[in-house]
Image (cartoon, rainbow, N blue to C red; front, side, top):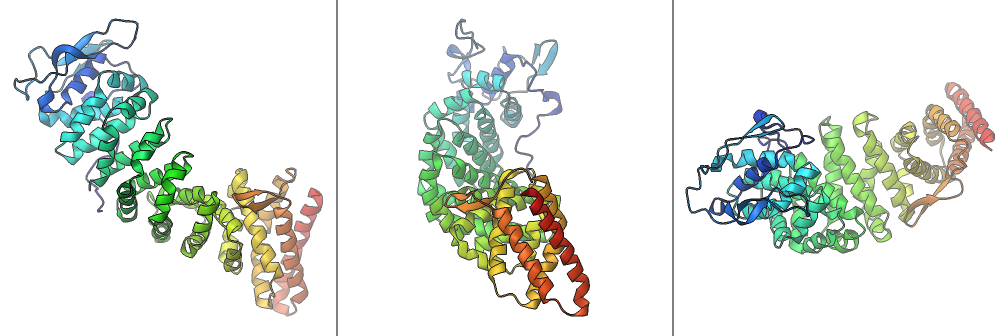
Length: 490
C-alpha cells in the first residue's frame, strides 16, 4: 500500500472565509444548511413534515427547517429561497453554492465543527448521521469518503452522537466495509473512528462486527503492508485499543493471535528499529512506542505473554530497543521496552541467559535509570530486569576478560546507580516478576546491588597486571560508594 503524500491532514482546515472557532456559537441554520447540501443529489431537502430542526430543548416546539423529500427540480442549483449569506452575533457566514463540486467544502467545515460537542449534538439531532450513511453509500471519490468518515470519527468523540451512530441501522457494517478500500486517508479515518467507538460503553456492537475473520485478516494485512506512516499509526492504535479493552480482549485477541499478530508485531518492530538506526526519526518514534505498547498490553495476560516470549525474534527486538541511542526521540520507547521485557522474563526466565552476556544491553538499562526516576512502574521493571541479569552473571564462571568488561560498565554507571539509590532511599522498595507481569517482591534492588558488589570484589581480587591498576582503583571507589549507599539505606 503506497504512501499518499498529496492529501492533506486528517482533520482539514476549512477555507479562510470559513475558519470558525469551535468555541464560537454558530448559527444553527448555517450548520443545518451545510448538512442539507451534503445529501446525495437525489435526496435534496425540501419543506415538509420530517424536518432538520434547530430545536435543542425537548420542552420546546421543534422548528421545522427542511424535509427529507426528493427534490425533482434542478439538483445543481440553490433554491430561490436559500440564503447566500447568514448572520449571527454580528458575524457574516458565506453560504457556498450548492454544486456537486462544493461537497468537499461543506464536508470540511462540518468535519471541523463536529469536534465541538454542542455542534455535534445539533448535527445528529438534525439527521447528519443519516445523511452521512446515505452519502457514504454513493460516494464517488476517495476524498469524499475520507471526509464522511472523518466527520463520523469526530462525532463519535461525543456520547450522544456516538450512541446515535450505534443505533443507526447499517452504519457499523458500512463503516467496516471501508476497511477494504485502498485509500490511505480513508483507511486512517476508519481506524480512528473504530478506536473511539471501542472505548465507548456500547463497544460490544462494534466488537461483534469486528469479529469476522475476513475483517481481522484485512486489518492485519493493512498493518503489515502499508508504507503510509499515518495509516500505520492508526492501525496500531486500533490494535492497542483492542488489547486494552476488557470487553474486546477476550473476543478479538484469540483470532488475531491465531492469524499471526505476534509475527506482524515483530516485523513492525524490526522495520521501525531499522529506520531509526538509519536516522529516519521523523514520525517513527510514536509508531515504535505504539507497537511496544501493544506488546506490553499482551504481555500482562499469562497465555499471551508466553506466546510473545516464545517468539525469539520479538524478544530480541525489544532488547534492541534498549540499545538504541540515548536520545529524546526514542526515550519513551525505551522505557516502554523495559516494562515489556520485565513482563516477558516473568514467563520466560530462560531468556535471561540470552541477554546476560549482552554488555550494550546492560549499559542501555543503566543509561535509562534517570529517565525512569519519576515513573515507578518503569523503574520497578528496570530494577527487576537488572536483578535477573546480575544474579545470572554473578553465578556464572567468569573469566578475567568477562569480569573486566562487566566491572568497567558498572563502574562507569555507578554515579547514576548511586543517585537513584539516594533519591529513593526511603521507599522500602524491591521488585520481583509475577505470572501477570512483575509485581511487588522482597528486594530486587538489593539483589542487584549485592551482585554488583560481588562482581567488583571478584574483579579486584583477580586483577594483577600493572595496566589494570587504574581501572582497579576506580572499581574500588565505585564499590565503596555503593556499599556506603546501601548501608545508609538500611
